Length: 167
Ligand SMILES: *[C@@H]1O[C@H](CO)[C@@H](O)[C@H](O)[C@H]1NC(C)=O
Ligand SMILES: *[C@@H]1O[C@H](CO)[C@@H](O)[C@H](O)[C@H]1NC(C)=O
Ligand SMILES: *[C@@H]1O[C@H](CO)[C@@H](O)[C@H](O)[C@H]1NC(C)=O
Ligand SMILES: *[C@@H]1O[C@H](CO)[C@@H](O)[C@H](O)[C@H]1NC(C)=O
Ligand SMILES: *[C@@H]1O[C@H](CO)[C@@H](O)[C@H](O)[C@H]1NC(C)=O
Ligand SMILES: *[C@@H]1O[C@H](CO)[C@@H](O)[C@H](O)[C@H]1NC(C)=O
Image (cartoon, rainbow, N blue to C red; front, side, top):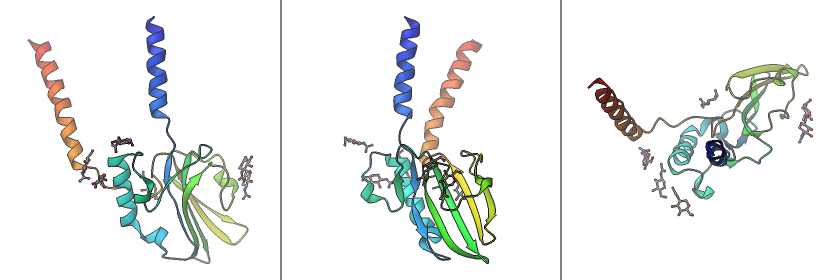
């Protein structure tokens, strides 16, 4: 019986945890384009997504995209030729196919948000970073300060429990 209850609980948690990933989506074909520079607007998207959730109508977002089920990774791809940015892309990805492929990009961790670069076909200096949390492929809004009020009751609880054990 307890096992059954636990299974039900686990199923519910899974249902609530499995939601589509959201990534920033934009692309520049030149240096200093909006995908590289519009960081303030991305931060607004991030704050809206964090505070108002996936529920919110997507028309209020500028750069947020809901990824298809088959794509569970957010990427930033930057391509340079002779030191000049010719492509800068933020998007969802399956973590396998990129606009420029390099063997270095296979078997490369998708959750760590580290960047790796490769020189492809003697021409394209390509850097890739991958991560897999909502809107991780771009700037992050500063933590909501009001959320610190949530930690106060927690520590108050710990204190009360500790006191009750002490007595
Ligand atoms: C969340 O949505 C409400 C109502 O649309 C809006 O007033 C508020 O500014 C939103 N929160 C953020 C962080 O944008
Ligand atoms: C902090 O988050 C709450 C909801 O969690 C939201 O109502 C409030 O507007 C946020 N404050 C700021 C400064 O973003
Ligand atoms: C989510 O959507 C439902 C139905 O559209 C609405 O009633 C609810 O207020 C929304 N929640 C938030 C946090 O916006
Ligand atoms: C990139 O490499 C993967 C794996 O080798 C392959 O499936 C995919 O088709 C390649 N994509 C392009 C654009 O070459
Ligand atoms: C992505 O890569 C997979 C595995 O290599 C391949 O089966 C699939 O066709 C590729 N998709 C595209 C759109 O290139
Ligand atoms: C991931 O890396 C990118 C590029 O360095 C950065 O803009 C972004 O804020 C990072 N994401 C997180 C969640 O720290």
